[in-house]
Amino acid sequence: MKSTILIACLASSVSTLLLAESYTPGSEQDPKLRAAYFNAQTHKPFDALSEIASVAQKTGSHFSPSDNMKTAFQAAANELGLKVEDIGISPSVLRTPVDGMDASVGIYRNYNLGISLLNTASPNDGIKILSDMSTSEFVKHDELLLKDKANLTLGYYFLEHDDNTSAANYFRSVRRLSPYANKALVGLGWALLSPRATSLKERGESSDSSAALAGDYLWSGSDDEVAWSRRDAPFRRAWAVAKGEKEQDLLAALVPWMELISRDPLDPAVQEVMLIIPYLMLHWDGQEARSQQYYVSAVARLKQARLDLTAIEQDIRSGGLLKSIHDADAVDDSGWDAWLSDLTANRLGGYLSLLIDRADFRYALTQYRQLNHIHVRLKSSIDGRSSENNAVVRNVMAEIERHRSDWSATLEKLALERIIERRQYTEAYSAEAEFALARNYERLYQQLSGVAWSESES
Image (cartoon, rainbow, N blue to C red; front, side):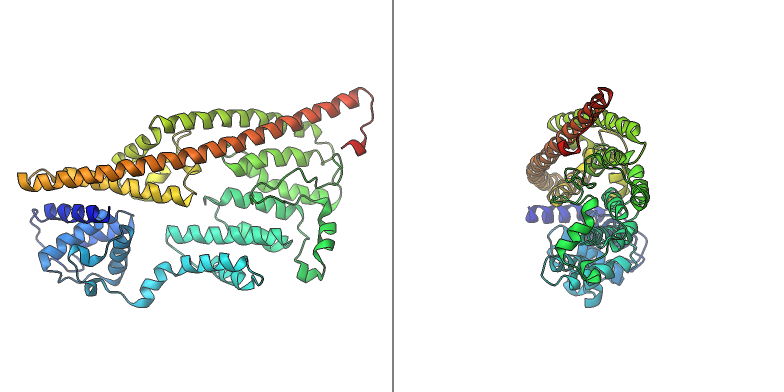
């Protein structure tokens, strides 16, 4: 596919030579270089390289972009798997200082290193790397997302290691409108539910004594950092009631969870909170009726979520996902962020947000959209060419279409896997909500029948 993209890029660049411009080609103020820089910055590398190739053909590769432009153009070439010399540009023209190039990839390298070190016998180095990212100032959207992810990672790390004060601080550092905000709110609630928990090292206690100390609270044995299972009863007894400090902790934990519960019911974090809140209200004196209401609401919302996920699956199978991508690209030309925001704005058409957190889906989506854009660009460049040139372009377009068909199949396959997985999880949550509701009705029946509930049966 690399050679096809290269031929398409060079073919597209020829059309820009047909336009006469009254400026000094190759200067930093060259409109074509500035347009190429904008395209590179907004994740449209094919357009960027087409403009650069056009400038190179006009100037004989004698042009002088700024250092920021050089870095962006190199990144655009890397995004397409090309080298700048492939499009007739000397590497020396776009050579940048080593520090400048490292800065663009350094935080990603550091994040991966920090994650790997967290899983070693000496995790402090990993904590230090991720903590430095947490306190650094970033401007670019991708870097801010990585900072949010570092804060989320540290939050759950400290939560799992009984340092809830540190965990709460990192969860609060995740931006409110970040894609990671919902997971952070779930974790923040658990951290606030036991705010006096500190690290084992600070307490000088063993893991056994830690378990005894934390016995009154809910701790997760799940590999999924969001699903802090309610099956491990945090109050030791099924119908125990929180009092004193525990009641205050419960009230504090409910603040982030109450904010989260009204959000998208297709989100795993929201589904988890649908069951957390009524469960904890059972242990809050006088809130049994509200607990029942929340369980009833959870059953209804999860049932609707199952129906929505079934509809989404049918939409993907009928080509709706690919159509939504085509429609968004045809209307919007303001870059990736605006395109994604537009897709996630409406209810079912916005299910892309359920898929985008998978790295393999993001990669397939990027490849598919790039091929779409190349196809449209080549089609628009046919007008005004000779018949011989048009034949070359049509041959390239046919090759692009073959690759596009392959990536569309991959995209739909990955999307279906994710949606089916989410539907299965939703069905499990729905079953658990219905079971909890039935158990509450059984308890009420026992009370009305004058039969004392035996704690040993719980």
